[in-house]
Image (tube, rainbow, N blue to C red; front, side, top):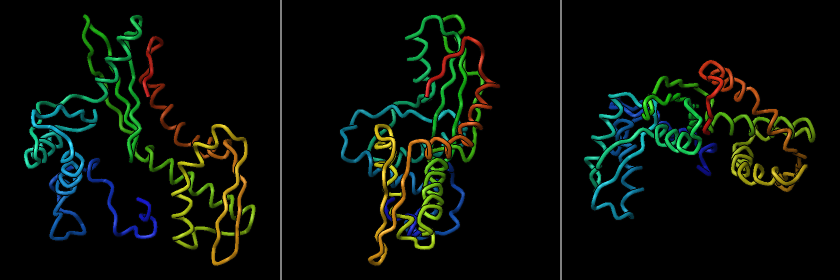
Length: 238
């Protein structure tokens, strides 16, 4: 991840969102399709854990039956067996409704890597009924990160006439600083980011408002979908 912008053709991060047996465009001897990549990831994550009695896997609400089938096939190749699958949004909704006895409707907002997924539930006779699942493409964490990186690059151009995107290393540096910048912006009105390129130091002044303004287009799209799903008594779980 810390080098992905410098070597974009050497990374692939859509193997969970596009989970299938469709051949990869760029293949090698280790990975034929996204299911192979998912297996490699899942196997790496679970090998250090004690899962001799199996596991329950919380799955995104937007997975279809084919993807669930592929996921179970991937799990069969791992060193543990799945005890069951559960809807991730349902787990969140159950906790929300249980904590607010007056809530009969609930919308769970799942901000995934590549998209936002809204899942609406309604309480009927003490049970939660899933009503709708809405996918909002290009409204996930990566879209936010790209928007913020572009914003910082624009501010560098505006404030110091330096374009970080002309150099992959500079753009990667900004992407790697995002987490720290976002954290600091919660407590500091203004902060300075510096880039030292071949002995020349370029700097930019950033405020929390910069990040908020650049997020608005994405959040507006999500809000439009929420307004179509939401009832007056609906609770939101993010």
